[in-house]
Image 1: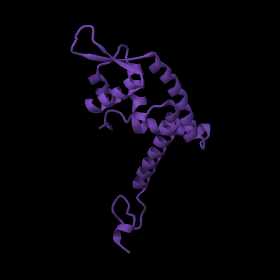
Image 2 (image 1 turned 60 degrees about the vertical axis):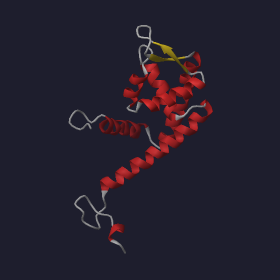
Image 3 (image 1 turned 180 degrees about the vertical axis):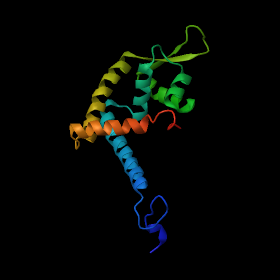
Image 4 (image 1 turned 90 degrees about the horizontal axis):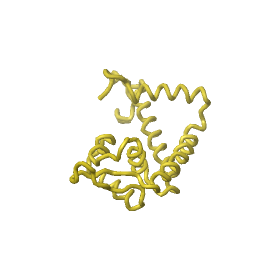
Length: 160
């Protein structure tokens, strides 16, 4: 038997399970499962998870955002936003509009179809959440919410 087959603990001692490594693996598996479930619920809406995220982000701005604003908020390169906007624009969910104060700037605004899609997305996301959380009791969901908040928003000293 090779030594790589024996799990090691945090100190590298063989035979001890690596609890943090197992947790990380479970989180990765859960992430993949969440993505699959979300994708399944978004298919009838005719939108990808990434397009869904961009559409929701556009809706959260007070005024139509610039492409650079979207890229920064989504933490992606501007080219990724361009591709997502192209797809949403082809489906008449968003449109590019000139900035009233600077004609070189393009802003992205929701269309009526985009707002209708957002309503459909809310239902699809609720259904996906129910699928994934179905095995948990209300108390377990509350505990999970607290744990996830601690991981997602670790505070100033725990951030990247």
